[in-house]
Figure: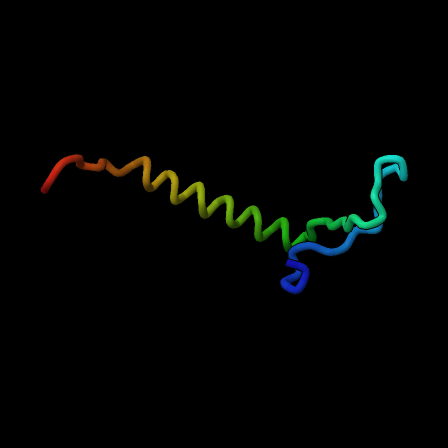
Length: 60
């Protein structure tokens, strides 16, 4: 995801009492957010298509 520019390392960390130095933190990039929103729209359109179909049961 980093290679594709969807996320990047974050320098923000929680309070040291809640943190573990071994953890890595990331943030979504503007491009990553746009890709996620486009994917959500695609899935929503697919779900609408499936809901609109009438499925027949039994043998044809």
